[in-house]
Amino acid sequence: MAAVVDDLLAAGPLTRAEQRRIAQAEGLSDESRAELGQYFTPAPIARLLADMFEPPEGRVRVLDPGAGVGSLAAALVERAASEGWQCSLDVTAVEVDDRLLESLEATLSDCCDVMPSVQGRVEHSDFLTWAAAQAAPEMFQRERLPFDLVIMNPPYGKLRTASATHERLRRLGVRTSNLYSAFVWLASRLLVPGGQLVAITPRSFCNGSYFRSFRQALLDDCALRDIHVFESRDTAFRDGAVLQENIIFRIVRSAQRPPVQIAVSSGSGLDEPRRHEVSADSIVHPKDPRLFIRIPEDPASVVLAEHVGGLPQTLAGLGVTASTGRVVDFRSREHLREDCDGDAIPLIYPGHLRRGRINWPGESNSKPCAIAVSPATEGMFLPSGEYVLVKRFSSKEERRRVVAAVLESVDLPSDVVAMENHVNVLHVSNRGMERDLAWGLAAYLNSTAVDLFFRQFNGHTQVNAADLESLRYPDIQSLLALGAEARSASFEQAATDLLVERHVPALEGVR
Image (tube, rainbow, N blue to C red; front, side):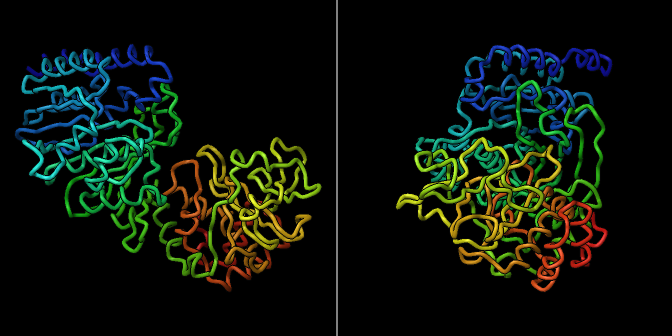
């Protein structure tokens, strides 16, 4: 019997599903892919998801939301067959795209061939509509279908807030406007106690206020057990041109919070990942009201988190606020100017942040660097003063995720200034701050320790004001002393790190 199974697996369900995936992907236009948020799962990645489950026993109900051609179900069945799981698998595959149904049916048929105890059923439906009906209160449903295992690669995209689906989800308490988080949120509600969910999604839900409700719901009902991180942002879905930074995670519907297993790989799904174990509190700090999910990628990162997280201050405790620049340039085109002649004032873009200072207007500018003063724009300005500016957007491949610079009142030919929306501003009640404090904050934010710590919970291209407010900071005396010395020093990275370690002993050697 084992030899028969091996023969079937050699050209089994996943191999055939992979052929169907490639054929279907070639026939999809970019517009169609974007409309449905479709990014089919390559076979090596599908195996990573299937390998993350703890083997179940008995009669096991499996759910594959947004199943596509059935690659994930095929990977799970292949694993069950090759390892001889003592169970039967009832697979429900939900797919809305009728162009994929024939391929999906064929994949489920292949699954039954390799493991006769498998039963497959295709639900031709929008998963959110279907799952909302399943998760509705008892009085509104005929039959509840709880699941033991959920395996999913949900679509990436926005959920239209004016849609009937969004309203239905709102009534269920599912408060999100993102497709992938809505899929995971609803699917987690369909788990039996002890049920497992494995998903590959963008990492963006781990931080920021946008996904706060999603994190709360997920962590209230389930426990994170495994997280797989990809070092390369675009390798996992190379043929689908996905630029999101993705992770795979496993949650269990349980109140227990055991240690979490972390794996780090290149992203191809073919290499052996590095693995280590961390406590649940290292992932979500019990005193963090924002419930940020931090992912330390090696044991040294756990130590780093303890040291940075143990610093005594917050921005609010320092009397400092983080805000996003108020000028959205594409909405203010009629007010933008090339220079400050006449009625215009300086406008700061991310490109003006250079080596810890503001280089305005700069040598060559592709964007206007001034904005007209008028009743329509006056609410966008700040008075001249000392501010810390931080770029809002970077990429994982860039050397630095957090890039900060000091704006001094003497840097600009105006008593007011405007910041473009891709810049974060640290200020004191919408005014500047003490000069040494500004320099101290900028030096601290530009340190390697902060950059590495920040990457533990920020896995996408944005550095939001809420992220800066979530950080811990040194005490005011240390920041002032750091700033006084940083003002007369170079913002070279090695010099910055040495200065920070000198004035923040808790970070000495933690890099």
